Length: 626
Image 1 (cartoon, rainbow, N blue to C red):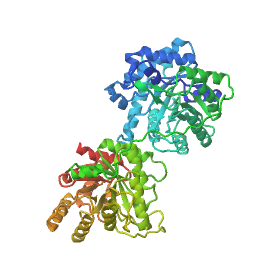
Image 2 (cartoon, one colour):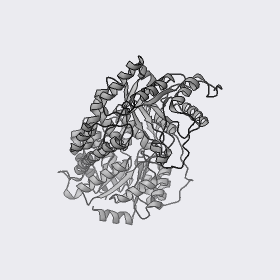
Image 3 (cartoon, rainbow, N blue to C red):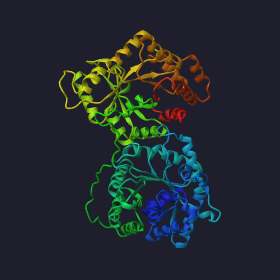
Image 4 (cartoon, helix red, strand yellow):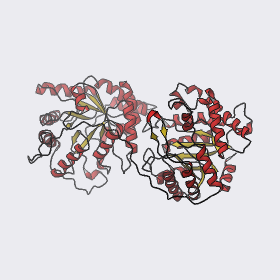
């Protein structure tokens, strides 16, 4: 079936997809950690029986058992070299069931997400993602030898995609392999009606409209209520575009013994089927938790339409949280690491420019996997308007389980607000602070904004460590209990005025600073010289230094930092290397790794500073620590 035939078919009548595969396999005793796709070859009978049940229930389209049959997911089971075999057997198996049923049923090749995060929030490059999708799709489209040429798959279903970039990569791969095949693309959403990376339905609609799809919509997510709401939003943005509605059977409930229960009944699904059609859906079906019973009920609703038998409920629930904060009065993990000479790896992240934190959280998760053990959350970097930094730090700690270091600028806050904000941060579980002056407002989004301040960073360090941590405010009044902040200060290891920088650092140390973060270091020998000179001058130890490292992105980036950012000096040799390199991003990573190796023996940690939000490049640099 080509694209035109598919579009004509769904224009004439809505089509019914099948239901869950994994739910029924698990219900048959297959362990949830097994490779469901491999069952095509090791236990084809159980897969065939599920296909058969959906056909008997009245499905117009069944999907191959190949949702996770890509190289990345198969690699988790040591099957990365079996992509071709598993996918082709999936097609052959499903096609034989269709032929044996003597019914007219379309066969869709199922392609799910890769199970990895794409750059810049992950470490898989776009071209590698496209290659993985193309490999699987080519296997699905290439007709197996035991199947007649006219009876391979009829269409592709790209489903449960968490990231618009990932769906785009899948579509590009599919069009390169099979330009005339019909493609259905479906995104999945979280409970707050946003994708896993925080995109709203409006953003999703705008992006999907740009992709070369024949039908688009929502699958998985929550139950029928949410999917109807989301499909309606897509229909409002894209009137006339064929939509797809394939909900889960509600939110799953974990029972004792590992059993999972989905609450939505077949009759409940039947009540929503016509509503999906009225909202613009031309394909409907079921995802996780649905069975042949759900599909049979939807078939009856399509064949004999009737009004819903009960009001449509609203869904509102909050998922579990991961809390990783130091208890009041207890040392933070950062402080313990510094005191016990454990090398610290922290990465700077900026809060989102809106209210959706998903990309921040996703990036923090990837960095944690790459080896970061703390996240520095910047406060309005470059005086750009962003979400409150302490709210972002709180979310990172809750959702990812990494302790945050909150950047706390004194600029733009009077003494009253400074203390109130600090108490609020402490109440949210934030115990690590990096005290700085902050960027002047005239360089940012609101140059007319107030830029005053009542206290400089060295004074704020003293206020926090000698007042708030002792149970007093700046006026000497008691607060209900002492705070327990660990406080960092800034230092430039390559200053123009060595005497002034050392004197200022010593003042910060005497006021109570626990550690120091540096600007990006590009000359490790100068940094070592500063540390040795400080010790010799004052005949005392220096506080733990966490050295800034910023991977260079391009020769233009290197020249900008060297010529326009105060305090940064990139040696001629490094800038020449960037200019001469045929792969400047790779060269920037290598340079950063060399700097990290040189600094590791003399500093207490590294403070990774991504450029252009490229967290994947930071992760590549951190590979040198493993």
